[in-house]
Length: 357
Image (cartoon, rainbow, N blue to C red; front, side, top):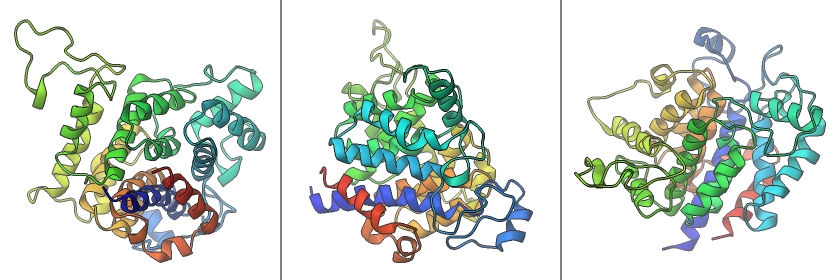
């Protein structure tokens, strides 16, 4: 196992997420693709300013949204504590983020605050509830956007990965399905940091971790999804989550990406196939598809994510981290790093986290 390659993939995963976030800052949340093309042309190929009156108005090309800001808080916490420290992360949210919010959407870093963070702010600041009583029911990827760093940190420790990601997720989102899909995404990302490719075999590798007890998913079938036999206990392997389906989905998207009889052309239309909205069940399939199809082409993965419109920022963050983990920092085109504001600081964070390997 080549440690330098692992570090390269780990840093690539973090920088891929930051780049994806910044690339979609300008054209974020255009649900009418005619309007998107009118404002940004037929193909967005780099960082852009938000248009007046739209989301993130006032920010400039290459800057991060609030998702990127929170991700940086998480990475900093992981680095300085040599792992996940929930009390420290919560302190950073209390001290570094919440004083800049007022409970409204158009506020705070990035000039927009997501639903789950607004909800947590109200419970924490206005109602003075303790952390752990702050979670809401947003069905979005907002926890993935920060816990992806936990997945990188614990890429070779699946049990610790699952526990830390679940604990962090429920700070803001308590729906069990959302938590299970968030943990599953982290497990996928960890395999990519290890050096695996996002392909049709990825779910078999994840299910082996369920069988070993490292991933806490309930599984009613035997190996290779074979049916239970008479006399088998119920369930053969019980877990924190009701089913392993969140671990099985990525293989289907990867199979679709490699199947010559299934073509989404151009690839940005994956947003139409799987859906443009913010919900986690729209975003994950599109990100898995793009990261599988462009497993060795970071630029294509993130730009097709951005050009699909809708909640393209999340699509680009998730595609960026999955593809960045596969190609490594060394194969992310320089222009995406050169155009990123505070690139040196973000690179230092990413590379410091990667030093844990």
